[in-house]
Length: 103
Image 1: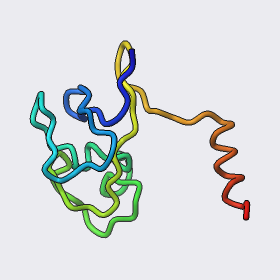
Image 2: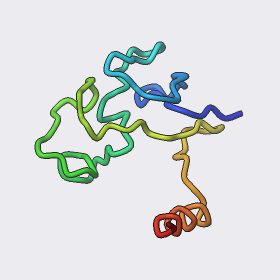
Image 3: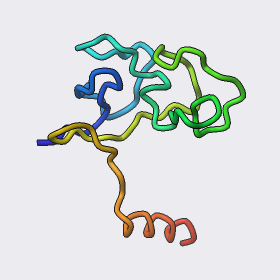
Image 4: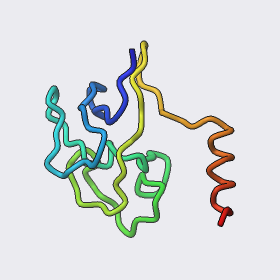
């Protein structure tokens, strides 16, 4: 059984959110802020300011709710044994690329 949508970045439990994540949204199990850097698909600890987007200044508390314009929820699935990124297949990525050039 898999659970799609936003999983809590802190406890890994499903939140039931599949659409927009609001600043006030929190995990019902651990109360972690969901619209935070840690819950964003752009969060990358090895990058400048820990974000793959070119943000102008660091957001100091990555686990607190914020108003970042780049926020997009992480698209992950929960599978037996842990959490996995919901990645597209090679064919799907190629089709998406080819669609960019279709009129």
